[in-house]
Image 1: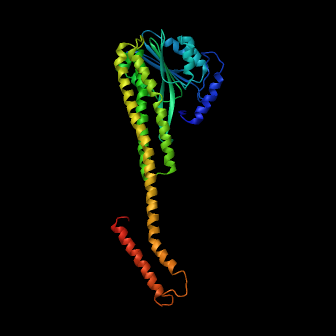
Image 2: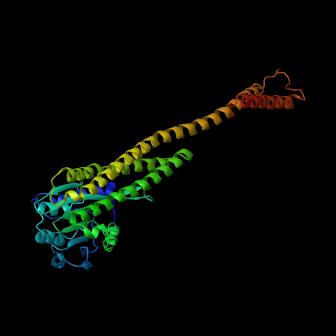
Image 3: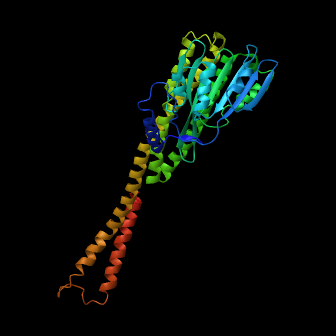
Length: 363
C-alpha cells in the first residue's frame, strides 16, 4: 500500500504525532499510515564465491550470517512493528534517535554518521497517472562495516533489480563491499525518480492537449493537482542532493573513496532530475495561462456569434417595429403587395449583411 500525498493523509499524520507528545526522545512510536500486513525480512549474504538468500522471521536469525568474509544485506519491508525496530537497535548498536526517525515516515532525506555505522533516510517517489498523484515511501539505510540494513515502508519490488544483480557471480556487486551495495540501493531510488518524471511529463502533455481542446472546470482541477504534485516531487530532492554532497565532501570511513565516483554519478543524475522537474513545474504554471487564454478565446467565439446574430436582426427588428405601430395613415397598410415587399426587403438586407461580413472575413 502506497502513501498518497493528500490532505487527508496529512491530517491523519498530525493526529498520530499527538501520540508522541510528552514522550522522551527515542520513544518508538510508528506515526505512518496504519498497516496490518506482517513485516517481511529477507537476508542476503554474499561475496565473490558465496551467495545465500532467504526469508527470516526475526532479526536474531540474521545474526549468524554476519562475517568479515561476506557482506550481509538485511532488507525489511514494513516499519510499523516496534519489536523489529528495537531488535535492530539491540543487535547492531543503533542509536535510539535513529530508530525513532525510522518509524517516522515524514522525515526528509538526511544522513547521520556514527562511529560504526552510517544512517541515511531517503524518499522513494512513485507517480500514479490515473489519480495524478505522487506516492511517497520512506527508505532507511543503516550501513555498517560488512552489512547494510534497508528498511522499506511497505512491501514492493523497488530493490528487485539489485537482488537480481547479486545472483550474478561475475557482477561488480558481488566483488564489492557494503558501501557499494548502499550505492546500488540509492541508485535504484534515483532511477525511480526518472520513471516518475516521465509519467508526470506524459500527464502534463495530456492535460495540455485537453486544455487547448476543451478547457473545462475539470481540466482546471487537473492543472491544480499537477501543480501540487510537482511540489511534492520537488520537496525531497534538495535534501537528497545534500545527502550525496555530504557523502562526497565528508570523510566518512564506511563510505570509502573507491565508491565516490559512483556517488558522483548519482549526484549528476539528481541534478538532472531537479532541472527536469523545474522545467515541468514551469510547464504546469504555463498551463494556467493556456487555460485562461483558451477560455477567453472560447468566450470571444461565443460573443462573436451572438453579436453577428444580433447584428442581423437589428435592421429587421427596426423594420418590423415601424410596421408594427398600426397608425391609421401609415403608407402601404392596405397595399396588396405590402407584406411580401417588406419580407423581400428584409431578406435583401440580410443577404447584403451576410455578403459584407464575408468580404470583411468576420464569418
